Image (cartoon, rainbow over all chains, first blue to last red; front, top):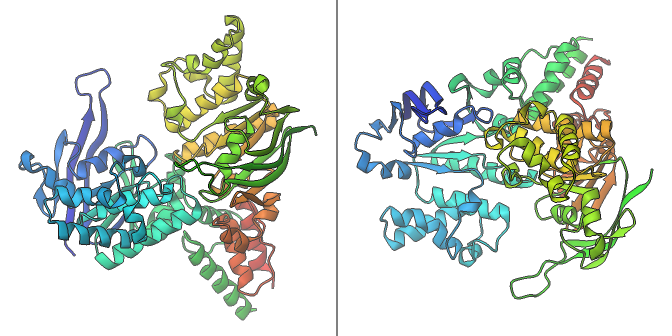
Length: 289
Length: 283
């Protein structure tokens, strides 16, 4: 695999020279491979939002570099706009950013700004709404007459339509009901699999994290605290609790089970793996007796 | 216990831009909530739960039927301020609810508007901030607090009014795990220690599991109204209503579906671990 994104010794200090000077990101180095599905966890104020805003050039590093597909995005500051096309960032509560007259126009905004032809724009819009699972009937509607969950999908489609190399989503499921959460996550997983695009998911929901990502990065106090598979990260539950984070409820059940003297022998972080482990253990136990 | 809120065959219609009535957001709900209860309201987006919340203290008025708070009808304009002092509301986004530049001034805002003497305001504000565990932050600027802390300040602003009941509409949706735990602890404490009636609207099944009663809304109607143990023992029905159950119930249900005898209504991590332990140890 090849590296698509590299953050090198990145430091960001807000309000330099003022009494409110604050180091939000402190000498962080991260490498992301093409096609990874990466999760980012960290409590409010940990620096994770500051970090992701560097990846598409919204913020300029105080020091350090950001490389997208091997190219330093700040090498030519006039070209920084291109970073937004390569790295698509979906903000938290993106439905508040819709502004066009129709859903179609809203999704087409990005591709049009990239200077694509009308035909190409249209095919990108259709492709994007298919990815997020919206019906084509919605395209003619005003973005203000559809439901909250649909609005959010329109906002995500607007970014997907630019066909970014890296898609970053900040809390895409916040405030949605369980069905809406499943809907968005399953479309993301499908998008990731069929396009092979690199996806980064920022979330407070550990259950969502556990069932989607292949690697999780934990940000704490402006630094990378952990990086590993969900299994490796959630195995360090105590450290996560200490910094105000948590692990999936099912993981907590198995930590408790271990405290009660039943050690299943491996970290559990999804209901599916829990079921397997328990039934296996039960089966094995019965065979032995 | 005394009845605090009663809904009698309540309907509510939103209007389309053309002024036509669209399908009812609340479709014939009859409901009674007693003083001191901790009720969680669940339902998928669009099920009518936020509309229901807004009906409880007269932010919106029913299109049909009545909402009675301590004997007062929310349609009675003369009583609306008394009703709102009894039933306070906390919303999802703390940033939309904070008005002052200092924490204690924010909590005092409503009391000042009531023209209360300043010593009394001081006393009530301190008491409210202590109740939510934010007293040490009374001199801080709200915008420098974390989301969970801001939400607790917003709750303090409501309890300074000494309401009998607080309705919280997804108060933890925008918070990180620590903020969520702190706010839930505050809510529990207000219910247990201060006897305040809590009506909590949430998408988090783990939070609903802490209530003493769970109401599930679907298409503007009440689908279930029972203890959390009973409601969460129906994973299939909850799934149908666009909801889920806590992972503690989910795993026990998986074991049950694999053909074993299992009581699946475990709501705490400890309870669930205990049942798995027993299951694994029985021959």
